Length: 162
Image: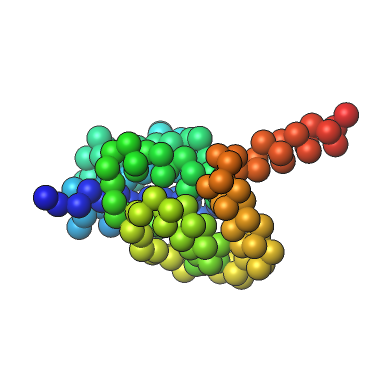
């Protein structure tokens, strides 16, 4: 039996349209893969990319639950588990790769989902190390408690407004 595969596009940056375009290209050679776009552009912007590439849009899942990189992974892992997906190609930008890889090792590793990264070149410098450390801690907290810390961040914002 063939292992179920997916392509995960991490949204949340100005480069996400490039990420989605590359995912459409990648989908052409991975004809059995589902494409999950986590917090990418609206359907009216995404649909033409896959249409022009000749990729059946029924293979594309648009998921707008994620609000940051941690939730890109925590929301997508639930989808992958539900669909029996065991291998994921992750599309992101090079400046974002270190942090995303660290999070994937924890979250996907915990659920025995194999992954590989495809990092698109950008003109941005790598993200600062503190973001990786912060999000590694948040990923561990999520594994243990089911909370990503977004809830705390939202409460903090509400507190600051009061």
